[in-house]
Length: 351
Ligand SMILES: Nc1ncnc2c1ncn2[C@@H]1O[C@H](COP(=O)(O)O)[C@@H](O)[C@H]1OP(=O)(O)O
Ligand SMILES: [Mg+2]
Ligand SMILES: [Mg+2]
Ligand SMILES: [Mg+2]
Image (tube, rainbow, N blue to C red):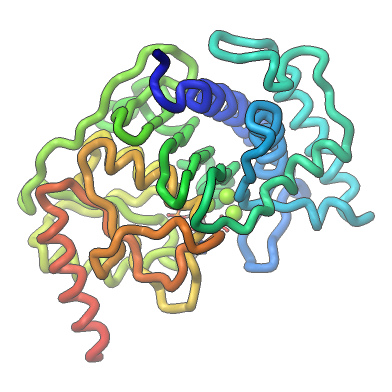
């Protein structure tokens, strides 16, 4: 008998591979007016929209009853000023949809030569991502480019997809086109996929190859620990993590990296800890920014909580609710890390 979520797994790998090829090619061709600034001041590129359209249309063909919680919507593309951007996105999405089938692809997902979609179909595919989330039933999340700022800098970013059932993440996948397969060998092949299915483990695959390696986090002690955090101090407080790191006696400098690539790196043992500490501006973390990554780490033997020690709740809607930060760490060190996080936070509250 096939393992649970076998078809979802195959589709997720196929969609993420195609989307990564798309975003990678966009990066090499991106011109200045192909990026917009959204209402919350964050950037979005033609690559974000086209990748969401691609993944969403594949999911809709394979699982037509499953709702999607996606980061992007097509509002800014449907107006007259959005015409050039819209045309470019339709062109890019169709290029990706029409690319030849490779091993693991299925023509029933609406991909392969001769599957060109009309403008309305592409915009509607983007807007399938408007689901409000919630506690019951199946739903997919899509973050077509996570770490858009890293993408624009030519650094790390990730194409992220998850399947959530009754508020529990069952499948998480992230594609990282710029990430070396082995971080200790910066010249090693670039392009990784991290994939986890609940109860089936966490794997790394080369972006363009079939071999897969099971990932288990090694045991860390404070002496061997180093931590991962955002490049952007506006997304996670570097001063708080500095205090936590001193409390834990960590001497290695933080590894700063954009996107959920951090969760993938943590799962494969590049540092034993990922900290994301609120900057105090009322930002609410989005479920598509943590659902895939948190399952990767848990399936590799790690623990993911907020700074109160509570599990992340993916059943509250599109966001995680009030932001208490994220503490993702190896099973052995998580209790000590949590203690240090709480000590740092209470010291900060007294100032
Ligand atoms: N003030 C904020 N606090 C935390 N995360 C944020 C904030 N603003 C944007 N983000 C999100 O952080 C994620 C990137 O995290 P990192 O810095 O670790 O790479 C992006 O999904 C980004 O959202 P968006 O996609 O809307 O830009
Ligand atoms: Mg964004
Ligand atoms: Mg994004
Ligand atoms: Mg994101």
